[in-house]
Length: 618
Image (cartoon, rainbow, N blue to C red; front, side, top):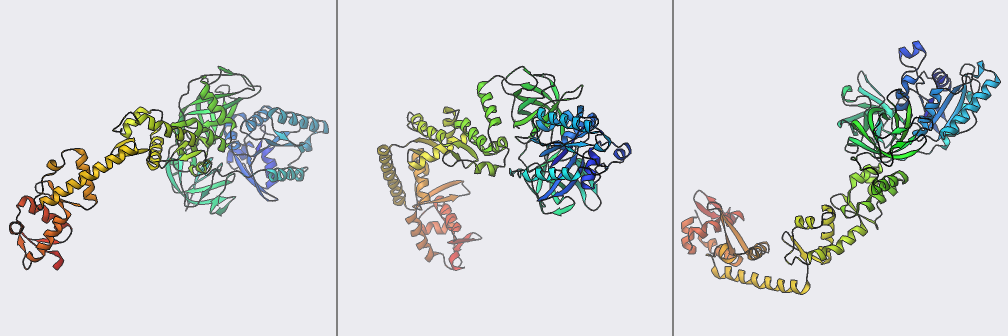
């Protein structure tokens, strides 16, 4: 993506037309006045592919529009009139390009057909000085004339060489397309255009219109007027959406649902323009990124004033919530008089108000500014400690999709829990050493909620992971809802006691036959009730419900089997009434009703009116 920049009326549009044969002044007002007021788009074929050109308005009133095009460019073509030389908007456009992270410039000295050799040389020297001042890498300036064609081949060669040297943009897994045009076309509906800054888009994808969060479905995609199934990072894309045009306001962006939640606070790295006025904390500015512009209050974190040319860590308090990816570039301009003052990168796109001059906070933001995504992932996990960090949050700070962030987690250094939290393995191991000591003084164990209160710095997901690992290793044990330290000898004795008690309970129920005692009688405490439940799970004891009396009767399995054998001979023909069955078995309705309800549930008997018949005879 090549941004075509420079002062108003220096021949940018004519030069793009001469290079590509395309007219970028599409608005009647632009064609009538001969001045670009909106972004213009063209493309030209070069060896190995095509180069998109963005014709940025040169008039100072339209710098905001120029910035919305500049945010997607890989290099800048600075156009300087041979007679006028470098002008104010030329300098501002060069500053904007540098602040947006552009490193390479192509210098074109235009209208050389109406200038003398001295003017061309002076303009070329001034252009080289401008590029050097802005920190842009540039080769020798190319003298050109859009009218006569002089130098166009040399300029095309310079553009082709730059394209060949340009590295492909990495796919971060999160699509981000700032929308610069919205229109409708009969038979198609809503169409939006923009430069796909990150990620990929495909026909049929569901996207989110940030920052509002409205969903939309992609009906079709075009790149350079050709329908495609998918679009890649760095391409100019037209997207046909199944949505109303009013749902895509200026400044909106298309992204993957759920990946760019809106935030009013941004933590950033900031660099001031070399010859701009100093910036003071609490100053209100215009914030421009993508195609969005919003008022924002500056909050310097490591100083009170940012002098020209200096770099600082800061926060921006936006007047309205914004959605912007981490590592995205932005521009700051003054309110009045309007001029570019600074720019930088978003370090944390979803944060809160930070305390100024806090060493730990400054160290973290400094690391976010210095590291690549892999380093950011590793650093954030380390800093989170036993609190852990959600994978979604980790991905957001690194500017990646959750899948890409997870792939960067070093297996030997980080653990992804089942709930989607990430914790460093050293922190998890340290917590694993602390837990047995904390629980050792609580012989009966504690609930997870109580354990969380005892270790407030540990994240709940991290705590659950550590407990699960210690239970699996035999260090800890679970008794119902309680977590306790496992003591081999004591646990063995407790297990033996439980086995003896369970056997006693089973024997009591077997001896009672079809008239077992109530649960409260045989299991007056929690321990015995748990053992009865265990016997039920093991099939030794049968739980028989009495839905009318809303109670349960517990029979031994052998007792129920004996009753089934007796009923096989009794329930012939038309069957028997409940009272008749009870009399035959020698029990009252208190026991016969729940017994029969259980036998109905296993389809041994079946109720017909007031009688029971054998279901196995059906």
